[in-house]
Length: 127
Image (cartoon, rainbow, N blue to C red):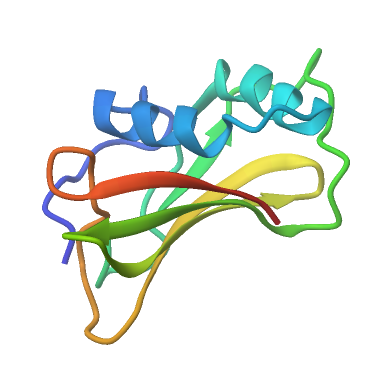
């Protein structure tokens, strides 16, 4: 179960923001829109009690351009350790707006989203 409980609508932590910046680091126009949305994004809570995957929310979407994406995974980060790929972290977009971050490990279930301090995280591209 996630250890950190905080109110929906609070700022992203430094670790969450670093991960989001990596997920939005594509060089295309839609990634640029995602980075603009990220500036307004807030922590939206945990969708599942058994993992640290998290939702994103916005106090208001006025003035934010929507991302031209059909929905679902928008960008991925490869998670590895000692040159072994362990899974992927996905950034989801729903209805044109940043929606959630999900960790899809290979093999065993993991409750913690890997960080740069614990794993090698590499931008794997846009979905």
